[in-house]
Image (cartoon, rainbow, N blue to C red; front, side, top):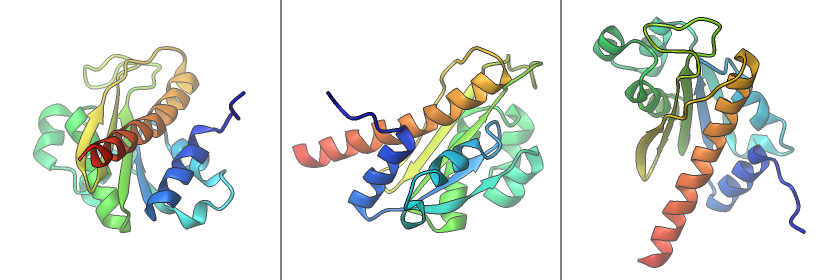
Length: 167
């Protein structure tokens, strides 16, 4: 039987194996992702820190998200998630950046329904966004978004490792 290892611990192991670090930028999850990462013993070896940019203008001011993008699409958009991940990676000097933005509810925001979530990933291999459609109450959506960000990291780094091994 395989040992159950929480996602945050898997991320930590992956980072250790790469000699890499991670920073996170959170909106929707409000610090929940960072809390999961620092729950892992030894997290200080791989986790650089986080920025909780809940207010839209902070996404631009702190993380460098394009103000025009925010003006046209609002904060709930896949490109915003990508730029948040890139910005926190740069700001905190990390190998990788992850981000969360979306609508946890109870009401829609800027034309986006509750459960709209965008997750950003940035690293040496490039950037991408994942956009799972989540359901449940506010706490469930936030928890699933944080878990989704960890899953995005693990899926992308596993794919990059496989591609490097194949070449």
